[in-house]
Image (cartoon, rainbow, N blue to C red; front, side):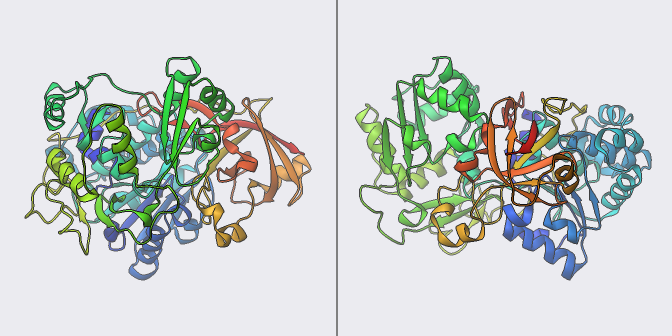
Length: 540
């Protein structure tokens, strides 16, 4: 993934949220934008309704944005690479691509051209179910737009081919010259409010802050020096969440420190997760509520919520913004940094910080892209990285003149099917996601009366044709079973889900959908395949 990370900012939006409203065409794929990112969804709708932007939606489910779309490509779940290769096949065959841009700013075009040659619209239709004519129309629409933005979310990444999906989006954008221009780009919509900031700060298994590789001797030397030389930094890549659970299950990890995460609802194959956590010698959970995971912990450290502490969040468009303490934290709850610093000191490595601002000043010293971001500068308005020095205005969109690696790199990618497809024993596909009224594992939103009144329980979305075949009625309890477990919830009959596919959210522990999901991992990104697994559905 090194080429992709170098070219596209390690998962950050290449462009800005404000640009969405003023572009010529928006392609949304793998993102139920109005429910998962309502502010961005509002921008998309306004671009279409008030400014005449074209909208292409690629999604197996009839999401709300379909109502605003010029064309909706309803693919079979897990076939995204085939769809994108099919779009590029049309664009290259009909010579609609940005020839000068491809020639001057990219590498690898011939390899890409060779691979996508076989993904004719007719061939893609046999894989994806998308009519060949619709694919051609969408390809021409995207290629002919002066500026086109791609928006995607976890519907693209949570597959064993998630990295391939993202690279394919990058291929399409570069093919038509839409990277490095205002109103264009490849724009992942992050799943949590500060997940971008966490990644920027090195909360990934293979990088230090600012995506400096742990394998780099130069980077290790710099961070050793910044830490006063007190510790030796390993060049070994760490583990991702699912890999940690597997290692705990095998006895290779003896202790876990879990902060602001609830894997007992959010990880795939929850039965395996629970068994893994029970294998540990010690489990420490640091959180604001007693989550399902915290209930299994040996030690629970109560932390302050966003309104009870100072600091910064970095949002999905790379914008670093201030967070200010509004109220005192209850009981023994403290800011996360204070807990970590105290614990570190007791374990022999002093972290003598006086304030969150002091930590931010250290971040500026070791994180080049944050070098010019001070509390004073973001007092009233956030700044977008890269912002390397105090006189830099921040960066509205990336790669204006060149990519980080010099040339943008095309990746020639073949379609591979999902890890688990329907068969006689498990004849349907389950896909998962969120609903507007709840957030992630419901740790906060299910504590609030309003969201819980709006969405009080988990539902199984099932197509009416499937319901008739299975003799299931609206509101009836149904049992959903995969190779890993069984959950029960009420049926909602709707054509939003295609025949042969059901949809469930993962907000409710009473119907913990991740008891069912497949822990198969993308070989590069190590993200599990939440979006496709084989299930059987029956009346409970």
